[in-house]
Length: 71
Image (cartoon, rainbow, N blue to C red):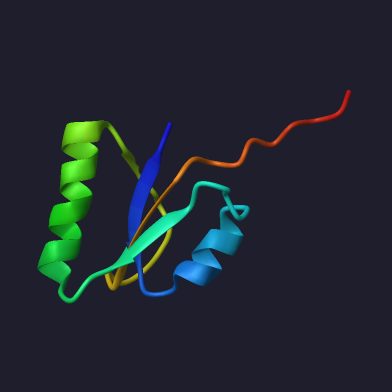
């Protein structure tokens, strides 16, 4: 499952999410374009909205890092 979100601080958010290998981000000039981009990924491609982040200057996508427990 892939996630999408918006933030003003992508480096911190990437670290919080465990530095996913497929982390991808892009910058936006305005909030309207950022939110439009996010809506397209959710509606057309099935992305889930990430619950963390503030702002809109950067959009990001990632697959959550799996946490495995050793038995």
